Length: 391
Ligand SMILES: *Cc1c(COP(=O)(O)O)cnc(C)c1O
Image (cartoon, rainbow, N blue to C red; front, side, top):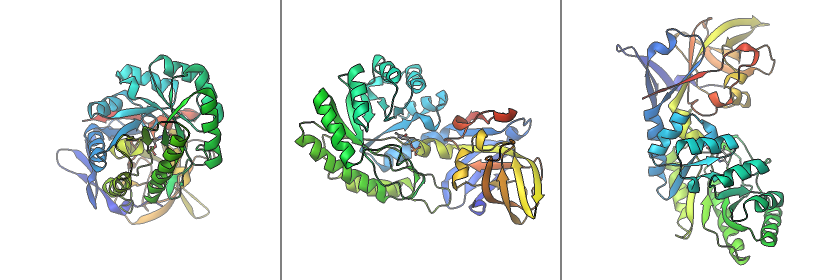
């Protein structure tokens, strides 16, 4: 269920919209109104200033941690450029994301390839373009990389708890303790270097303890790697840093304090990085969508939006926290929210919106700067949201 109560929409006389979360002034973005004037499709408004603030706030919260923005969260070139100007590095997972780095003029030595399973063509493309660091979590991947890029620097992705994450990633990736042994053995046999350890706590993780456990597990693995003759030099804490939808989620400063304390026992010669995606881009974006129609079926009230699971709201199918703001004032009602397509999976759970909601109402959804436009397609002829970057 959504929590519209904590958020308000202000209209000032300069014709500006200001989205404000009452608890935290840093949660707000401002934009001028014309996005709804000649409206023809959903719009994701992204605030450049907010992107910059997010990067700065992250770096201030964890001074020893070098952020590598996870490009998949929002690969828009202007967004990448903005983060590059703020001095952040990058993490990629595909050939297209490698190409985005080339176009951006990123220092390829600092670009990390963190997808644990890469096609041989992708490894070759990355290697040809100067990427040195590759994530692995299986012996097969070590062998694959060794055949293409024998001087690669590998970092092992280990499994860690994803408890308390809205979008868990465990299960698909991450080596178990015996899996780690298999990776080490293969690397030794092939003369490949294992130079670091990584983990991913799951996306939108509100359980700070997952990072603590991950860092401790990495520390133990450093000792093991050294005993096998490797020289560990990298701790990569992955992504998962959460947005604050309700105010109940820990702020980045709180997470940073816990992580920083845990990092004190990591030797100085270990470089520490993270791969924030959602935290960097999410709060900078507000999606503006429109109600297509409302319907009552057996006393259940349905609201159909002009965008849905196919149009950038895929995450909402998983009980994902979302904030819905309507310009209509009225008693809240409970609605089953759906997208515009004829597909029955295009339904996004129950949410509160004013009971008097009608077709053509605008609905504002803050915190959707990440994993929205990049996951959208035009299935069934409905245009996906278009992104507009504002200063
Ligand atoms: C998706 C991903 C990230 C970013 O995750 P967020 O939850 O958006 O911070 C970082 N690293 C890897 C390897 C990923 O797959």
